[in-house]
Figure 1 (cartoon, rainbow, N blue to C red):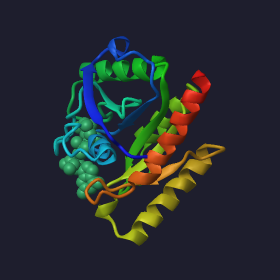
Figure 2: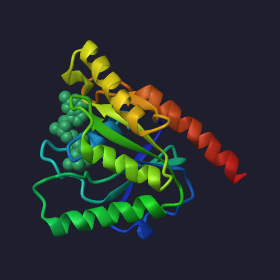
Figure 3: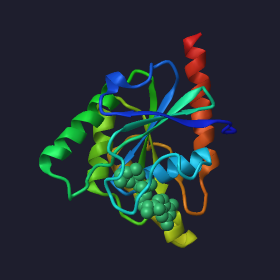
Length: 203
Ligand code: GTP
Ligand code: MG
């Protein structure tokens, strides 16, 4: 799929104020600083579409980007950032939970994990929550440039093994490096397939 147009639409804290749910939507979520905003920029080919930062906790709202006038990418705040207060964290959790559970055009969620880490409880718990709610998700490994190719394979195999212990069927896995602009096509292909199904169901 070619990205012809990628534009920022709006940011807000309330899913009910998001754009009308008339186009398929894909949300990017994961621990703070994992590289969500960077992957969105890589996918759209626009370096500063979503704001990135070396400091965790950069993205704080539900951010909508409209692609090709046909679908939405959504950049979400990260979870698991230790430096925010409990009250702040609970506010974020409610905002994200309400969005994920109520957004009717949300087709699939991409959960991002840092390829360098073994499966973290916070991520596995988050995925378990999605599974319980019947929300489909895929996993994107980020920052693959930080490891050698053989180490990437080892990490993916170990993660798959862990997932296989927890799930009957493991979700699709994608390996990316926003730094090296790698891993873009398979993700766009998956989105394209979902988009086709979404419009077929609408007819
Ligand atoms: P929050 O919005 O704070 O939750 O973070 P985020 O998940 O959106 O992460 P962001 O995209 O802002 O990236 C965090 C840091 O990781 C930035 O310094 C990025 O440059 C860096 N980063 C992101 N992706 C990659 C990657 O593929 N490779 C490398 N080496 N660094 C990356
Ligand atoms: Mg971000």
